[in-house]
Length: 406
Image (cartoon, rainbow, N blue to C red):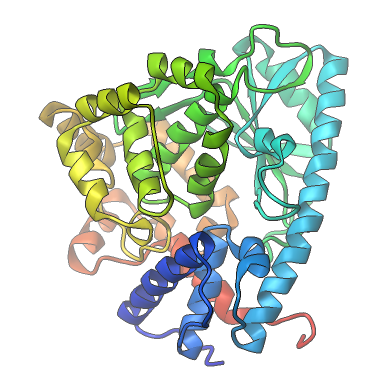
């Protein structure tokens, strides 16, 4: 296969095409392999990794692609199964340490989905373990995570990231089990959409939380968080198909009581991810809930979601607008505040972004993150530079070699 990086417009078309094709294969597997070029097969590897689909495709596809594609899927499935097992073991260690320390934690998102068995072994990738902790227990929880062989990394008001000691500087492509399993400690569960905050922290805590690792108080609480997280990623153009799959597979588990709970406290922000979900999966909401969300969600945002597809709102989109998600603003005043925050971030926000750029291998691999806001704005206007994370995934896909070949 050709390993050269083609022009940006070729990369963009290949990522858009392979993304939508692979998404269709997940929802309704077809009988024939796509007629892709050598580079498009590599772009498909990147798209599959970005969306967390590789292990799922390995068991679902009814056709076979080129030998390196087949080897890629087989390796990803095996590695994802091994990685999931390591995450399960780490969850047990966290539970035991938290019980001993007398700290209550809630396992968030993927960590909460694991015990529900919505997926076969290894089908759903996890890059980290997200934990909710009360503000007063934040430092105690941080110390217990450090006792498990972790060190503190990038921190923000939303969470503190912990990385294993002696983590590799350049992680392997895809779901390699040796890639670091990060732990993110959250004092709050909230998203800026884009300047107005949606905070559901209190709704994520079970009333009878005990020391150790706790589940959400209900399936409704878990689904609410999945929708809010998807909304945040949808707004920032970094949605993954895995996030939509989580929602599609969890929703049928909800009973009448769960839906009644959601009717009382599900925000307008839930509608955009539900509309995106509806493009790929049958979606039925209780009529009163659906009607309320349609009334409360801005019409311009609804129209945008009706037009867009996953390739346009994910990391498979090559370009990144200067003001992603501005259509989420609830008023012209909010839109202006959002523009101001993007152009003139506060000093503490700039410091956090610089810390993140130094600590994340993907961001540290490029000079783009070190450029000033003015330089970035000028380049956005003149050349629309490709997204750092997107190009990193494509470069990794081009460099990929099956173990047997290596």
